[in-house]
Every structure is written in C-alpha cells, then in structure tokens.
Length: 574
Image (tube, rainbow, N blue to C red; front, side, top):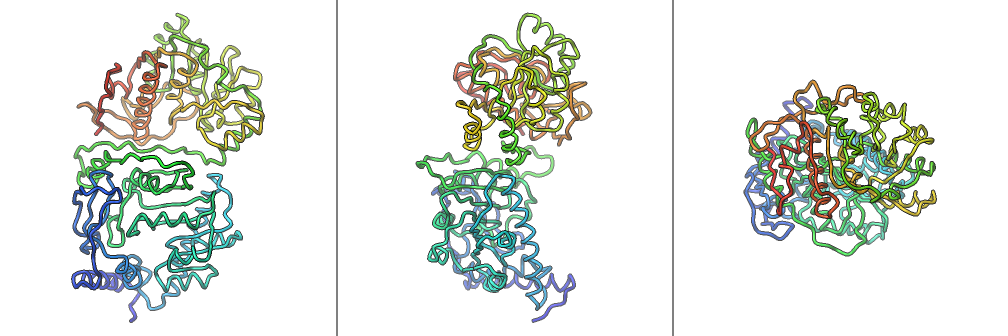
C-alpha cells in the first residue's frame, strides 16, 4: 500500500494505525493484563484512561513509591506484535508514510548516529573509558552503535522490530531479538545503552538480566523522558508502560542493584553494578503529591515545589584534570586546620543585601570575629578596608580569576581541588589549603599519585556561599553570623552585591509562596536553601553548630524561624 508524502496523507496513515490498535484492544486480539507496582504495594491513584492519541490506556500512580505505570496494559506478546505492526507508523508517521521504508530507515540511522556521537562525548566528559564492547538494548535501526563501531568496538543490539533489526544488521551490527541470545553468545559488554527503552518494559525486573552481559566495571546508560522536564502531553502513549521522574528512576535502579554515577532531572543517567551488600531503599512517597500537582494543577494554581536535584555544570574530565594539576602544587590539606578554631565566625556571601550590612560586618569583625568569605567578595571586602581571614574558591568558573588579582598576605586561601589551576599558580606565595568537594575513588587515586596521605572532604553544597558554613564547622567554629546568603531578590534588577567581582550570571526567576508570603527567587536557589537547612540540621545534631544568625534578606528566614527545635519543621514551598 502506498501513501503520498503530503501532510494529509501522513496524518491519515497514523490515524488508521491508531484505529487499528484500538480495534485490536477492544476485540481482544491484543490481550491485556493487570499489573502490580514494582514496589509490591497495591495502593494506586488513577491518572488517566486514554493515552495521548486517544487509545484506551489507563495510567495510575503508586501511592507508596510514586512510580507511574499502565494498569492494565497489553501482555508482552501483544506488545511484540504491536511494535512490528503499528508502533512506528503511529510515532514516526511524518517519515514512515511511504512504501520505501529503506529510505526512512536510512534517515533514522543518521539521526541515531548523531545521538551516538553525543553519547560518546558524554562518556569522555564523565571520564568513562572508551568502550570495547557496546550493547544497545532497544536499538531500533542500530544507528546509536555506529560511532562506537567506527571507534573499533564490537557492537550488539536488541530489537523487537524485525524490519528495523534487519536494517541494523546490514550496517555491520549484530542485532538479536532478545537479551537471551546475547547471554547465550557469552557477550560481556563494558557499555550498555538503554535510551528511550526502560519506559517500554513490561516488567522492570527484566533490567536485572542486563547484569548477565555486563563486564565487572561496565557502565549502563539510561535515558527516559523526565516527567518534570518535558511537555506532559508528550508522555503518555500506548507504548509506555512506565513514566519516570528522576527520583523514581533512582529508586527503581537502586532496588535493581545498580549504583548511580550521574542522574539529572532529564532522567539522563549513568550506572554501574552495585558491588556492596544490598541495603533497603526508601520509597519516594513524597513525590506522589509533586507529580499529581504537576499533572492536574495548571496556570496560577498553587502547587508544592519538588526538591529537584542540582547537577555540576562542569564535565568530570575537566574537574579531574584540574585536581591532577592542582595537587602537583603540593598545598597542604585543609584537614591540618580542622578543629583548630572555635567560637564565632562571620560568613560572607554575595547576595544584594550585603550592601546594607557592610557596617554590621565591620563592627563584628572589629570585635576579633574572623571572616570566611566567598572568592567574589574578596576584593569587595578589601576595597572597604576589611581583610578576611579566610577566602574560599569552590569551582572552576572563569569569573573566579578576577577574584585573586591582588591577594592579601594575611588571608588564608581555602581552595577546592577542582578550582582553576591558574588560581593555584597565582597564590603560590600565599597561605593556601586544599580540600575535596566530593568523596570519590578517582580523587583518592590522584592524591596518592601526588604523595598525599590524607583526603579532607567537605560537602560544600551547590553554592560557594553555602560552603562557608561546612568549612567553618570543619575549622571548629560553632557560632555563625551569615551575611549575603540571600537566595532571593527584592527585584530582578539587583541580583548581587554592588561591586562584587566577576560578571553576573543569568537567572531564571520565579515567584514562590512560603507561609503566605510571595518571594522572588530561582529554582536553584530553592535547592540551595534546602541544602543549607540540611547542613545546619546535621551540624547542630553533631554538636558542630551551636547557633546561626542570618543578616539581611534571606530565603532561609522565610523557610525557618532560625531556632532549633526538638523535631524538624515541615516547610512547604508552593
């Protein structure tokens, strides 16, 4: 059967296959079955009865773990027929509406190859070794494998669509119908791809079988459309048996025996085999409200703000290159100063409210209370005749350079190992100490390489202003006076202290309501505020922090009354 390539013909083709699936579901030709949640609970809330194309497809969310799934859904055998008979004609109608499918396979092969090259770059950025054996589970026409084959890797694919698999095999890849065939072949891959696949599984426990084809140090790449990062109307389709957000994907993968190396809200993620003894994973029950709010509340309706995960904006390869270069400078580890101080300390960030607090900082500093400031406030304080005892550099942003043009001989410089090597060079004649901002094996290996016997690790959070608090606690200070940790704005025109070093970064402003008050902030700043509250709570419970006061405007003061209580308060942000 031939169809014209015009839009009307393509739409007609898609609609005919949509109707075909609907008819087969109603007649029983595609049998359905009830499903139980992955977590084992039997407590669901109905989300919808029709998928995006109008095909009957009931979606529910588990009230215990927040995982969304189809219930009921087609059987595994029905889905295999569906992928061969209708799936690509519904979802790829603009390009599949011709009798010459070979040409369209070629187009999609090229698109997939482009995505494969991007994935190769991600591997390099994450400092993951070049793979020698690659498996793409759900490979379609196999294009994702092409760049890896060009780099010399053995390439294998798993694909239910027979015609697509034949095309991929003709390109030099070994394409099979099931993972059982790869297991039988004894394939051991050091890189496995699950791109736009896990949401199609009829049983998530099948992911465990991937372990049987993984080499001991293999990496598994999983991408699935992140629920909070895309158009909701795109998500729910008959082919999708599950829908994930980052938190539910993390829960499922950890339960299945994988360890997260990286995961973001896009649900772009890398995993390795969990080599440690199994431990119980908490169900992300609180995300039920976040998901249902996002799905059902639109426009100006208030909804609870999820605690999204922040990610580092710098490639891991760059960070490790910096660590290697900086360790060669042989600066002492910050652990040499741990617990050597006590009492009060002033922490200075770069929020706009600092401008109105300069004299308060000066007055407190004149009473012999030392200052820990962020790098961008270093020249600011010096220009006002205030010499900070400590300055922290946390990341390798270009704007950090200008902060150390005229370092003061009385200041101790506390440098995260990932900071710019040029800053380490500038400060070689000054007092400097280093620390690790993350605890990982690669950093420990680099420390050993350069003769270090200690590894001082401080959880510095997502912001250098936040880092002044855990660094202060590590030094031994326990009474904190915090300036410039605003994490909010009085207006979009003033986002930082007047005269702060380095250029201002663009902000994604948003208004949130906290305890009846509307506050102008950003999604990142809300995450930073939660990180700060976590650090304060842990520090106080461990006896490292006795008191803390925030001066000027601060999102923290909207979320917390700055008093320690027997039980933590539930802070709602909508």
